[in-house]
Length: 263
Image (cartoon, rainbow, N blue to C red; front, side, top):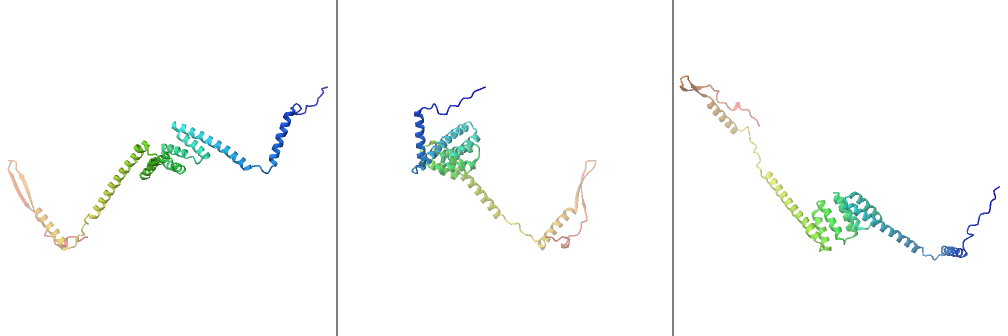
């Protein structure tokens, strides 16, 4: 028959020093809970700071991942990464500026302009954001607004050769071409309008007047004289050529009652 022994009590082999330390720590925590002077606001701010640090770290990781995807021309995935990062750090102007560049590569100009405007709103001193906004505006055909954006970027960073030689120069060239096209179109419309107004109207003839009837009678008389005689050339077998004029009876000269009066 099997015999059973008593189980050892938990903590039987715990040292006395360890037990005393544990009891002292528990007493301190109990006193902290019972104390009304605890700065809970400080504790909440500390926890919030830790959460913010976590958000910043995760946002930076997502931003870097999106940049790598954009370099490999995986633009949609890059936009998705940056949207996730914006959920964590919605005031990061760099994320909006990078997103605008990728949207321009996808030929989505309206969202690109919106993203660039968001970047400018969050950091109005970023010349890269103004440059991206100007390029997006050029994509929409807003040349005047694009020139203004490039000028603001140059005011912030006047030493940038890219802004001078590429962006602003190209925008001004497009602006001159636009002005010439508008001027040519306006001149063409003016010439067309002048041609329409200067055209002489077709006169309204009175076909029932006596003058018209007289002219018609004269034309009929002339045709009767021409058709009243016919000249026929006859060539005989011997080679003799003979001209014979035949007279035909023609109707009398038509009077005014013959013509149909019409208008």
